[in-house]
View 1 (tube, rainbow, N blue to C red):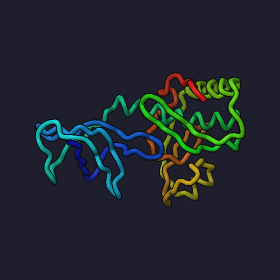
View 2: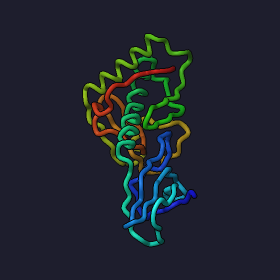
View 3: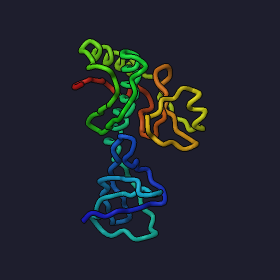
View 4: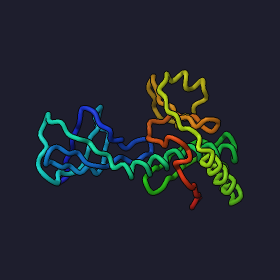
Length: 199
């Protein structure tokens, strides 16, 4: 039977902004809770899953373990999404704007506006550009700041998204600066090879 657990703090990333949720386990002595999904629930983070051993009780301290290998795959794909947007804007023009995305351990999908289908040559240029940035192994830095400061710096925001007074920016030096609350690589080289498989 599926259940939900709320902790006073958590290392688990809740599904939002196109990025899938973390999975993993919550442990306490002999108790074991398999976290299959993590969702924002009002002002709390809800760990959804089931007890596979023992019993969890209100007020007890648990050890929260995120599936690290899965999280790394998500981080790689999310940072690659930022590089992809920068490459599309460079190859197709500054009018390109993100209109949605999906970031999972297996793949990424990036939805964007453009006035025509992207040609095979343009896709090759985009792919080559992203891979060149990966090969440069540039730092990926995140920082919280007032939203006005982020806008003055030219941070890209998702159209229609609501942001608070303090925002988190993710920067790849000389490539991209975006408002983003997701998980990312520490360096672009951690992404590995980037391939466009479908447009």
